[in-house]
Image (cartoon, rainbow over all chains, first blue to last red; front, side):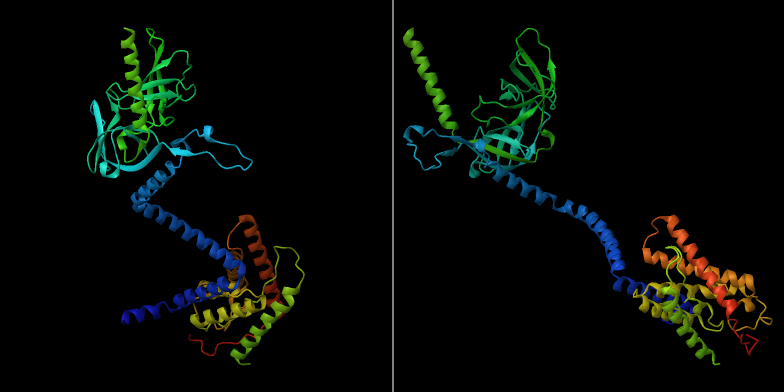
Length: 292
Length: 178
C-alpha cells in the first residue's frame, strides 16, 4: 500500500495529465455530436469486428445442431416438391362449370424421410452403409437414398427395427436407371468396382451427342428412384467401337466418403406398379403358351 | 500587483480577446486562424507546480471551449501543452540559476532565440493536437500539415507582436537561491 502511494506521489504529474486528458476527451466525445458520431462509429467498427470473429468461433460449436435442423427443414421442404405428386385423371367425372373449382387432385407419390448415416464403407467391392432409421420408422426395402444435396447414394436393401442397411451406388451389383439431362435418353448406372470416384453409364445410344460435363439424372425406368434427381456429370467418354452405345465414366455428385445426413425416399405406389408389371408378364406368358 | 490577481486578469483578458475579437475577424484563408488565448499558459510563472499548471491549463481550455461550444476540445490541447511546458522550459533556461531570476517566461528572461523555440514548440503541439482532435483523422496529410504550420505561424506572429507591443514589467524573484 505504501508503495502505491509512493508511486502515485512520484508520478502525480503524469497521472493528473492522463486523467485530465481523459476528462477532456470524454467531454469532447460526450457533448459534441460530430465527435460522438465518429467515436461510436469507430467503436462499433472495432466491436463489430471482434464480435464477428467471436461469432465465427462460436458458430463452430453449434454446427451439429444447426446441421440437423437444416436437414429436418430440407426434409419437410423435400416432401412439398411437386415432383412427389402425380395427377390422377378425374376428367371422365368432371363437368366443367362456370365456377372455376380447382379440380386438380394431387396424390402423393414420393415421400421423403430424413436419416443419419451411422456407418459407411467405400473400400470394398460391395459397399454398404447403415442409417439410423428402421422398420419402426417406416423404412422398407427398395427405398431410394439421397444425400443432403439431393444426389443419389444408394437404396435400402435390409431393414431391422431401428436401423437399415443400404446398398451404395459403389456396389458392383448396383444398377440404377439413369438419363441424360439434355436428351432424356435412358441408360443405366453401374460400378466397375475400381475407383470410388467414378461410376459407369451404359446404354446411351451414340446418336446422342454427349460431351464431358453433361449432367446425368435418375431415369424413369425405376420403381425405386424418383426421376430427375442428380447422379453426377460425365467425366470421360470411353471409345467402344464394337457397339452402338456409349460407355460413359460418370463422376458422382455425391461424396461417398463423408456421407452424413441422408434422405430416404419412398415410392408410395411401388407395390401397385410392381404388381401391374408382374401380372402383365404373366398375361403375356399365357398368351405365348396359347399360341404354341 | 499581486501575481495571482494579475494572472486572473490576464486569463479573463485573453479569453475575451480570443472570443470576441480574434474569433470575429473575417477569416483570411481557411488555413489561417488566429489563436492566441493559450499565451496565458505560456506566461504563467516558472514557480507554479506542475500539477497546478495542468489544472489551470484544463480550466483555460474549458473556459474557451464553453464559448466555442466544443467542450473538451481546447481543454485537451491545453492540458497537453501544460504538461510539456516544464520539460521545454527546463531544456531552454540556463542551468545556472544564480543569474536567472525572472519569474515568468518572456523574451527578455529567456533570450529571443530560446523564447522563440519555446513559443513555437508549444504552439505547434497545441495546434497539431487540436486539429487532430477536431478532424479525428489526419485525412489528407498535406492539408493537415499546412493547416498546423500556418496556424502555428500566425500564432507565433501574434505572440511576438504582443511581446513587443506590451512589454511586461518583469518581477524579479525575491529568493534567488531557488
